[in-house]
Image (cartoon, rainbow, N blue to C red; front, side):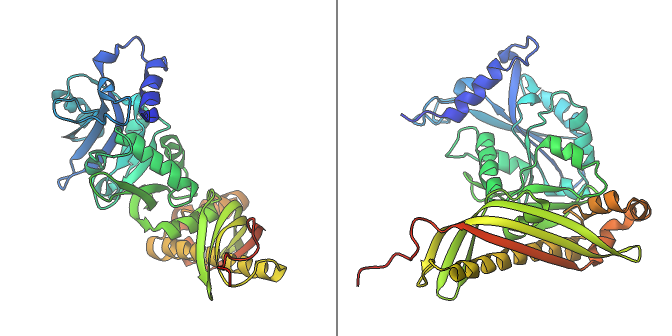
Length: 384
């Protein structure tokens, strides 16, 4: 039988971590996921996902939740005037103290984020139990409570399932992985606006972590789709190893990016910012090629490199246009360049930088190189 390794490792890590301060396991509720949202009246809604270690199955054949069985996780929500108030008041519906140091995922609601996330970060920063390595996500089109209530087939502890999807999609640059400790640092950075990964609910068993929540001054202002997200991550130099697929006349190509370097700057003229500059250098391997042309000649490879460059440039343009025209939010960090190299200008313009950023044209240059085409140089064909 296949062992549910993630669940076992998770529970054992808690038991062996040495962070209990002599607290008995039976005296606490192990919180694996935390959700924060607001209702229509502005009340804070806090949701916790609690794991019951004794009910976590050791094999995939016993997935918990059957008749007469204790469910591996339970989800509870409570309202309050503040996050702290809601958590303290939740004691009236839970039997033990909530232990937050085991939180794997923090899910924020849309309404909460639109009003501003600074208060949430303030509370979590003050709380000595907050798990700084928790993945942070914003729920789109659903609530944190609904996200944490999914009954995932792939893992009985849905918080671990969600964390796994973040790890997988972040490598492919469909979502930006953002941990709580990173968010604490970024919220204080006046030179760059924050972004957080997006999570949506597909059905009662499946979520999708794809896309980006865009903020301005700590408030949610909009979203990037998966392609705009990839363009943003190229500029931010956080792209990982995405697979980029595109069509050409009589061919389809998929290329895995194995290395990418992004540089950004702001061109000044007469003491004022005049243009944004983006330079990307990347290398990739051809993962799949469907077409009639051979790939044995240098000119064939050069054509593919040019198409790849244009595809990446298009995605960067899409991300820039969205951030500039729709959101007026410098998520890329051009302000950091201005702050470093033009400190006098930054001192007088930092409060209006997002508006300045939104008006600047951009020069984008992408240089792509294909390193490997695979073991064969020609497409597979039937014998004639």
